[in-house]
Image (cartoon, rainbow, N blue to C red; front, side, top):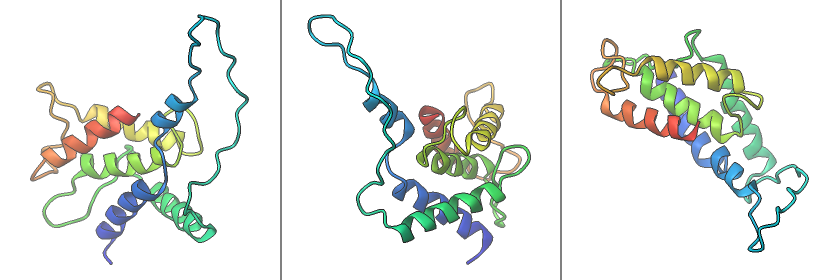
Length: 156
């Protein structure tokens, strides 16, 4: 498998397997106001159990994939394909960033916070005045990357 294919497959598999997004988890933990208006105390933080179906072997594969992504992030916060039709840095960065978010990290918290923040900065710097999120000099087609970037921004 080529380096490009491995990066793409790793990001997609991590997105599918890693469980709920941090946004959904944070929303589920928000205290709800009772109907009488009294504040509900927030329960103590309990470590999240692994989602059903995540075996030790699956966890090891997820962790290995996350390490692979971290090791292949560029200094500017991006990930790039090394394909012959373009490097698609916005799409690759957004997908890798989504995988890191799915692991539970955010731009400010978690073991991959620095990497998520760096990816977020790269995506934001790729936004053009017309609203398109792309690196046109490196991408022959940019709409998928723009869509993935919007999803990453929404989850961040």
